[in-house]
Length: 450
Image (tube, rainbow, N blue to C red):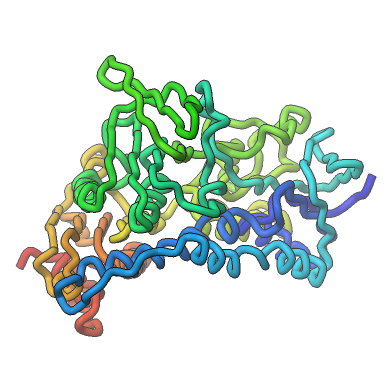
C-alpha cells in the first residue's frame, strides 16, 4: 500500500489543476486515469472538434460567397483533415506524462476502484491518501436499447478514417448539432433524431429556431419527438427504429452516432465502498465541492453535480478544490453565469438567462430580439441567417442574458460576459467605442432599439 497526501482520479482540466497546485505546495500526489492521459477536451472533445469545425467554416464561407467573387467551393478531404487533427491530439498523452514527471507526480494508468473511504486499487497497486479527488469526467449515457453497441460515440466520430455518406445523430444537443454541421459541410447526408419537443433546450428558443433554419438550409434533417427504440444491422446498412406520434418509423443509414447526453463516469469506481453519494448529475458535493457523505473526498469537473460541463468551469472548480484541501474549506463554488457556445456554422453563443428563465424568475426585463442578416457584419460575407436576443433588467439596467447566432458570436459573447461579471450597465456597455467594422461594433445595436 502506497501512501500519498492526495490522490486524483482523472487527468483532464479539473484533475490536472488540483494535482499541480497540490504538488507545487509540496504535497505528495498520485494521479490516475484509465484513458490516455490529458483528458477529454484536448483529445476527444473541444480541441479536435474545433479543428474540424475550422474546415467546415472554410467550406461555408466559400459557399456563401459563390457568385459574390468566389468562383469555386473547396471540398473537405476527410482523411487529410483527420491527419491534421491528430497533430493536435496525438502528442497530448506523452506530453502530459512528461509534465507529471517534471512536477514529481506519480502517475498510474488503469481503472481506479475504491477499496475503502480513503484507498483505491489500480491494477495490482493499492494507494491511500488523506484526500481523494474525483475528476473522472463524463461518458455517454446508456441508451438501454437493442443494438446500442452498433452506435459510435463522439470519440469514435472524431476518429473516423472515412466519413460515411449517410449519418444519423441520436440526440439534439451540442454534440449532435456540431457534428451535423461538420459532416454536412463534408458532404454527408445527416439526420438528427431528438426525443424532445425542441433541440438545444438550454438555449433561447427563438435564436435556436434561427439556427435550425440554417441547418435545414444545408440539408440537415431534424426530426423532433423521435424516440429511438432500436438499431439493427441489415447487410451493409444500419436500420434505426424510432417512435413518433404513436407510430414506429425506420430510417436506413450508414452510421449512427450517440449524441444523446453524458453522465458522470463513476460506474467503475465502486463509490459505495467509499461511502460517496451520487445523484443524477454526478457526485453529490457541498459548496466546497466536497462529498456530502465522505469528507475525505472532493469532486470537480463534469463528474460533480454542480455547474455546467464546460472546460473553463472544470479548471475553476479544480482551483477551488486545491485551495480547500491545502488551506481548509474556505473557497465555495459560485454559480456565476458562464458563456457557452455551440460551434455550428454559424456558431450560437449564450450567457445568462433565457427569456423563459427570466419569466419563471419573475424578472422584469427588456427583451430585444432581431434577425441581423441585413446588418453589414452579416452581408459582407453573405451570411444568410444571423440574429440575437438580449435581456436587460428594467430596474438595474444590467444585462442578464445574451444569445447570439452568427459568425463572431463565439468572441462577442465574451464582452457580454465581462459586463455581467463586473456589473457594467447596458448603457455603459453600449456607449463603449469599439473597433469598427467588427462584430464587437454591433454590440451597441444589440442593447438599444434606437
